[in-house]
Amino acid sequence: MKIEALVFSSFLLMSFFIGALAARSIRGISDFFVAGAKMPWYFLTGTFVASNVSAGLFLGATNMAGNHGYAVYSSFFTTAIGYLISIAIVGVFVRRLSKHYKVYDFADILATRYVSHAAAIRMITTLVLPVVYIPLLAAQFIALASITESIFGITYESSLLVISLLIVAYTVLGGMLGVVWTDGFQFLVLLFGLLLAVPIAMSYAGGGSSDLGWKYIKELPPEIFNWTNQDWPWQVVMGQFAWIFAAPVMPHLITRFLTAKDERQILIALPVSLTLAMVIFASVIPLGLLGRVAYPDLAQGEYYYLALARSHLGPVFGSFALSGIAAAALSTCSTCLMITGQSISKEIYQKLFSPKASDEHMLFAARVTITVIGIITFAIAYIKLLSIFWLVVLSASLLASIFFIPVMAGFFSEKASAKGAIAAALAGGSSALIVFVVNEALGTYYFVSELFAGLTASAICMIIFSYRYPSTSEERSVYYRIRS
Image: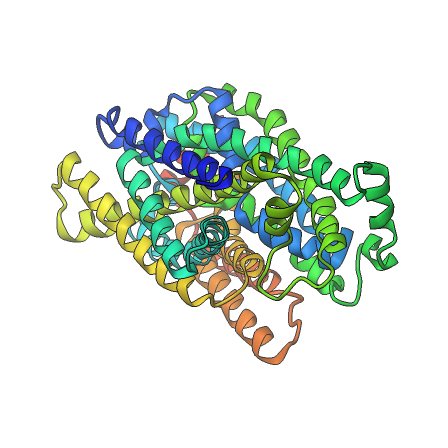
């Protein structure tokens, strides 16, 4: 077996082993859904960064960087701002909420704050999650299958089937506890692989000289150093602001804070997570440009990062670089599957079909739901509806349009009411989808992107409906409790 295949197989098997090992420590719903709420800051750092550095960054963003240069950084600095808001503000408030109320998932967070219409809030959230997360999941499945196809020389379809089975299996076994444990391992792999890739690829491009490699980059067309260009105009730059609004309300990120031992662990993890994330982001631009230098005629459907890892980094370092992509994708997949599966099992199976279900039945229902979501994602990844990068951006825009206003208004305004939150979520999501479809069909930029259409409609509806149907005394009580 080639060393690339050996290292990659070892990584996949280790991820599965850790997830299976965590299954032995699952004692109940709390362990499966929030990892027992006892994670220290270093686990929070690993799971936060790993779950938010996806294959869209390694494959999709490096291709975008190779084609558009430094303009792609408009996506990264907005993501960093979103991370800051999500950890320093949302993470702290979510952890405070979980101190006073039984909170296991994203639906619990919204339903606890908007308690007067908790059932409706839960149902809307549960129905929305698969819609916004399946595009993101499909992007990761596509990336992992592409890597597996490249390493083992098997068909994309066979690779996709193997990867899908692996992801679903270790998520079903270990739950959130297994996800956090494997995130720690996967984070180390992705960081090591990515940091090695930049200097080695730069040296290779220059025939052993990093300075010469950089010289070749500077000989590329000068527009690669501009913040906008013909193919990455101001409308696209503005569309990247989706990350400022999406990161603070991503359910797979917010639930990470429910696993924290206490609020202090979140605050300790903040600067470490931001620093590591920016180091990772900073490496994407040179990798994309080096890929363009080495492969000026890259075929459509191919990826610069994969080509560099297979041909320019050597068998050992290249296999670590490829494992880094897999680590990012696996972490994102397992978390999104967990969030979607547990929400559906709690809010649909338990509420509608088995109100008195035991913990054992609830765990079984969550695992079945995770499996079903995995099958649906497999089907979408099989037909490849959109490219990896734009699947991720679409998911982020929908998340921001639907949830940003209800979540942030709930933390910062006692007047935010349940009917206002429901109206905001429905109006934001529907407006974003309509504008996205119109933009795609006509090649236009109405509202610049679907994000701003969704946020505008959501904010207007929150203000109008909260004024018309004021918050209840119980909702204001929850607000003051998490603000104290």
